[in-house]
Length: 330
Image (cartoon, rainbow, N blue to C red; front, side, top):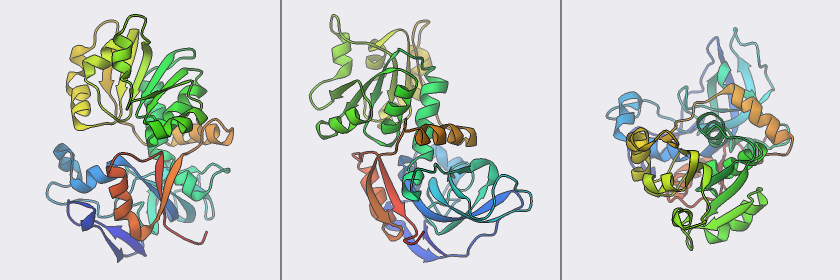
């Protein structure tokens, strides 16, 4: 089978398209023919071996997993003898980051508990855009952010992969959503259901919040961009919560290292790392099939073009998700 192989840390230039051995499923695994994958920020972080602490589990001097790729959608080709939820022919999707990655390939073996049947109203490419980003948004809002109906929620970095899902999921909870993005992406954010939009190239929402009668929020999800953690704190209402899921390194480190220190009795600030969840994929499948959530896809690339796709995502200006078309015939 063909796969994009990574044998050393570095830029996308170290990735090569190779013929590798087709995997065989274990007793509790499912062999999936991959039709589509998608690119996440985590792909280029892993490719470059950053943050350095991640190398303790992912390979100190070189990657432990030679085929990257979190998200995939495809069709079950075979199942292990102890698999009970799936059978050959099922159309499935998953986030592979809790196993051994491997979405940038024609086939992969996936533990049964990570898979879910793909939404029946999505193509394989659309389904591949969902798992990592949408589960991150769901867990950040629901579990860490404790979102409630009627709350004022702000999504910073709303036009990216996590952000586009977060806008829609927050609306499904009944929140009043403010989406922060650049000038050319505001109409798209409105189309996703955002009640208010802020153009960060013209206005700073933290500065607006600090003004007399400025708008403050019950929950802020930072999916991208940068503001000092104390600026986020000033933009929160009493009882407000700030959750960081992505952004520049300074924003990440502040949330991880300072979040608990600057949190008070009235405001909670911190970071979260999403965990792949079959149960949450079931929830997202229902939200998608009922029309409450849809993936936003900016570009499609071929499997051989994965290096170019990762460069595009690393630049930080993708609108929604970037999809890899692994198979041309479905």
